[in-house]
Length: 419
Image 1 (cartoon, one colour):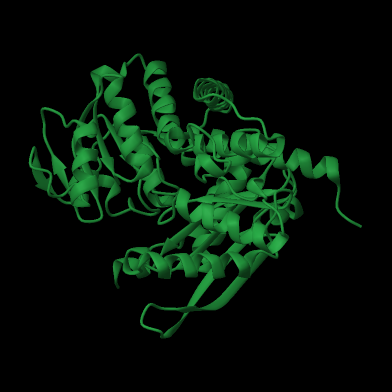
Image 2 (cartoon, helix red, strand yellow; image 1 turned 120 degrees about the vertical axis):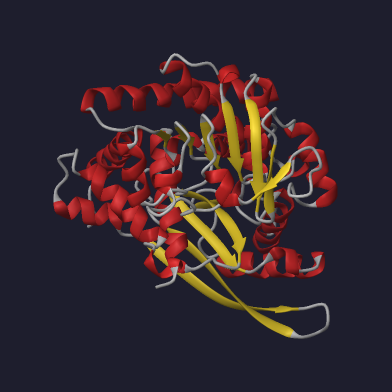
C-alpha cells in the first residue's frame, strides 16, 4: 500500500486531536459534535484566461469552522494538493489557535488547487481576483478576514483587498490581513510567525534549564516561517546546523548563517545549492541528531514510520499539523517535548489581529509596539498552557487544546443556540 494511502487525512488528524483533548474535559457529546462540525463550506469552480488565450478551470475553497467567538480568521493557500479535507482541518486548527491566543475570532481557511510557480504574474493576478470575487459572499471585516498562507504573500492579499473594495465601491482595508503596509498592512507582520516560534522555543528550553545558545537546530522549510525562525534563533545564539526546502537541504555541523542563506535563496530560489554546507535530503534533516527540530513546511511530514528515527529532543511546530497523531504518541513515549502548532506558530494570527484592529481604527502602531504586544500575548498564553500541562499532568498539545476548546465551549454556552 502506498505511503500516502496509509496516512490519516489532515482532517482525521484534526478530529483525533480534538477528541483526545476532549477526554480531559467534561463536555457533553452533543457539544463535542457541534465543536467538531464546520459551520459552512464553499467550493467554487472558476475560469481564468491564461496568457495564451485559453480558458482554464480552477477549484477553490473557503471553510468557516466556527463563528462562536467572532468573525472567522484564516489564511489562503495556493498549492497543488489543496482539497476540501485539508481546508477543513486547517480551519479547525485556526479555531483552536485563535481561542488559545484569546482573540475574538473563529477559524477559517481557504485555498486554490494550483501551483503558483507555474503561473505568470498576470495569470496569478487574474486567478486571485476571480477567486476573491467567487468567495466574496463570505468575506467582510465583520464576517471573515483572510490572510497569507503557503503559496500566497502580501501582494496577493493586496489584490484580494482591491477586488473586494471595487465590488463594495470604497476601500475596505480590514477585509484582509498580511497585505502591504502601503495599503493598511501592519509593521511586524512578516516576521510575526517566525518570531513566535522563537519565543515559544526559547521559553520551553528555559523551563527545562536550557538556553538557546546551547542548542543545535534543524529547520525543515525555509519559507517565511522557517527563515524568520532560523534568523531569530541565530540572533539568540542557537547553532542552525541544517535547513531544507522542497528541493533539498544543506548541513553544516559548524553552523549555517541563515541571513547569508536567505540572500542565497533570494538569488538561487533554493537552499539546496548553498555552497557552505553538505547536501542532505528532507528525510535526513528530519531524523538528524539535533536538540531542536522545527518542521515549518506542510502538514503530516512526520508520521509513524519516520517518528522512531527522529532524534531531536524538542520539536517546535512552525507548520500546522506537521505530526500525525500516531507520530505524536511515538515521540511523546520517547520523551520528546513537542511545542504544538496552535501555540508555537500563533504569532502570525496575533499580529494579523493587530493589523485588523489598526485598519478598523485607521490608527497604526510602531513596530516596537507590535513586537512588545506580540511577545506579551505569546508568553501569557504559553504560561497558561504550561500551567495547564502541570495541573492536568498532560503533554503541551493536550494542555493547549483543552484550554482552547474550553474557551470556545464557554463562549457557546454564553451565546446559546438559535432559535
